[in-house]
Image (cartoon, rainbow, N blue to C red; front, top):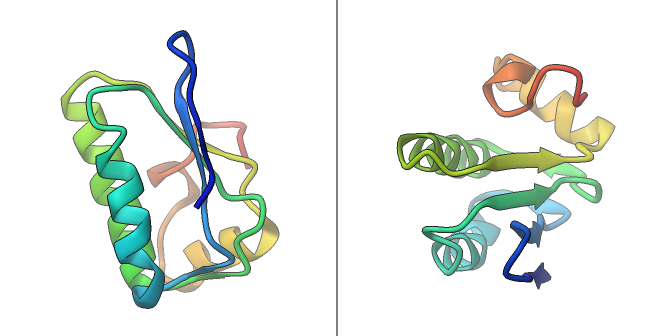
Amino acid sequence: MNTQNTSSQADCIALPQQLDYAHCTELRLAIEASRGQPLALDAHHVEFLGGAGAELLLATRAEWAARNLAFELKQPSDDFLKGMERLGLPHDCLLERGSA
């Protein structure tokens, strides 16, 4: 899991290619390390989005919103977007309007 951080910008975590139950623990730990800071998640390389991965992302977005912290999902791959559709999730539940 790659993370980048400078004091003036959000932590950026690269999401794994397979965003499924098996990969959620490592991702959750990386997200927890970013608590209290703006967060960006790079979805460029995601090839599969499963239910557990989507649930983790939705919970993270909700927590960051509740804390009034910036949350951004960057560069969603076509497979990421297809996974959202397969799970019945509207794009705007994780993406800002115009990001997809």
